Amino acid sequence: MPKITFLPHPDLCPEGKVIDANSGETIIRAALRNAIDIEHACEMACACTTCHIVVRDGLDSLVEPEEREEDMLDKAWGLEPESRLSCQAVVDNVDLVVEIPRYTINMVSENK
Image (cartoon, rainbow, N blue to C red):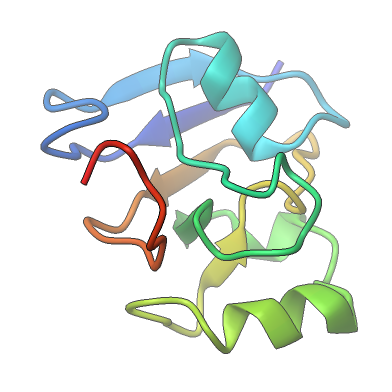
């Protein structure tokens, strides 16, 4: 069972957190199942960028992003070459290290 290490995030997991993930599930589903409340304004439909993450280790184990995800990522705050949408990034059998950016582009978030 692969593990996902979430680096510390001041609001979502201040201490960081290591969780078990199931092969074949998206990173966001694994995170939500383990009480890491990554924002997902479009309900995980690849229609926004609020679930943007940066995969610091293990990126090569993920299936390449489809064009739709790449188009959405172009709008993400703090885009990096290792950026993915966590609603589209499917876990394989490799451990991952993930960073959740501090900010998202979500004008309707009730938490802002």
